[in-house]
Length: 115
Image 1 (cartoon, rainbow, N blue to C red):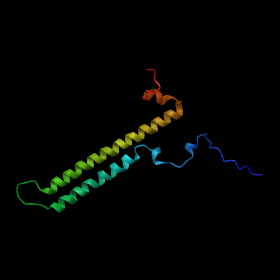
Image 2: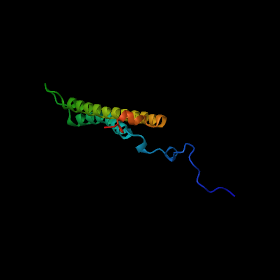
Image 3: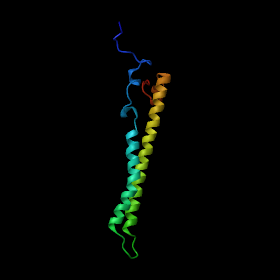
Image 4: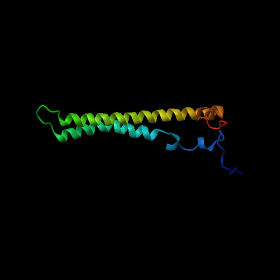
C-alpha cells in the first residue's frame, strides 16, 4: 500500500519549496518602476518638446525645456531603481545571515537588545 501522507520539505521549511512571490524580493517593484520611468521620461520629454514646436528668436526653445525636464524625471527614475536594488541586496544579505547564524540579524538591527 502506498503512503498517502504529504511529503515533507527536504530543508524542513515549506517556505523554501513554494513558488517565488513578489514579497520575497523586496525592492523589485522599485527597480521595475524606476527603470520604466528612466527609459520613458526622456522620450516623452522629446515628444512634448516636438509637439510644443520650435520657435525662432533669441529665447530658449520649448524643445530644450521639455527634453531637460524629461531627462530630470528620468534621473529620478534611475535613482528609484538604484534604491530598489540596494533594498534587494540588503534583504538578500539579511536572509543569508538569518539562515546561517540564526540570530545574526537581531544584532544588526538592534532588536532584542536590553534597554
